[in-house]
Length: 431
Image 1 (cartoon, rainbow, N blue to C red):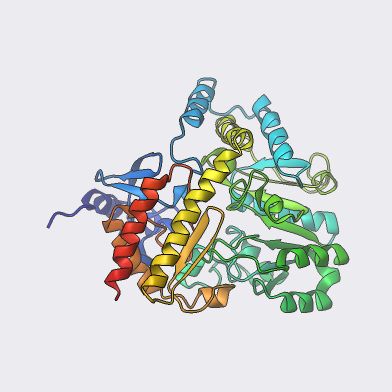
Image 2: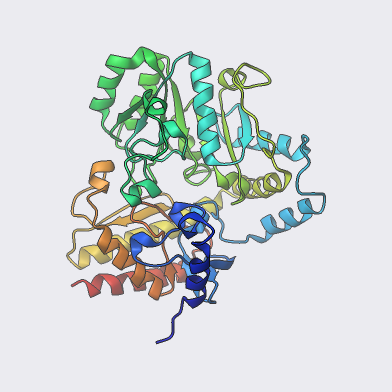
């Protein structure tokens, strides 16, 4: 039988000799689904095309930023035009100012913003800003929430760590995590106890407003509101990690969506339309602590890269000027995830589908998934079977139970219908 992934397997065989594990990020590994990783050569709209020419409906969307679909023509043209002037200058550029102004206009809680080069860098910098502003050291995070690979955040993190079953990371000294406090997501009682004992030492609470690195886990009723009030009453900074939810749940992010005003927000690749970029922003009072305005040092030679800024400015401008796109994206997602729920229900199976806006996924478990413990009970072997079946039907999902499915504007009714038909075949194969 013909090997449909021969070129990907050949490239992976070569890659492992030069790149640890053959991939430049663990989330690209396919080991948890029993395969070698796909190597992608092209993308367009809702599709990716691999090194063997196989075409797939893509629900990874570069881990979120391709909210309008791959290779949007307006973004592409903006990148090409910007590149004609040079790739990087090491000086300030007008597009950085325009980009910062646009983000401040779109996100209600952001009065000032600093560009960086990744979501990890944004989190690291936001935490430093919170510590510098409060004069405190302790940070409260939540089990299963992933905030990049900063040392102090690699405590029961989600994403690739959860997929690998690694509770922390080698190479992280104990001293780096001694000021990291840990709570269960949605556990208000546990959080309140932590504040009762350590409230005057906590510099910040950092949270994914929708936990999208242990699958998709929604905030329970009153959870985010209580975090806001606890931070207010204890003088702590509330940080929303919106590397995934930023500009996806709404044009103003999760803060606008839920009606909660965080003190700081971190953003990732969506503000570069998928290019390597990140940012953190928030209240003027905190952000003016950042060098050269204040004593909290943070720098980056390539921060505000003009190519990435032009790409991101174009994408965010489209989202700002066309609110109807969000209605279309959310319609596509609702049709998909409600359709999955119905197929599971009609088959008499106990599996769960969690979704909000255009983020969602399937958990192969018979219990509701509300935090790290219940998420980790999902049958990962069943997910691997699900992944391989859907791939055989021309549909590419995240190669991990604990990542989100991302729906874009390009996932139109026909794409959703094809996906649901494949999903129904899989569910029926289990009976």
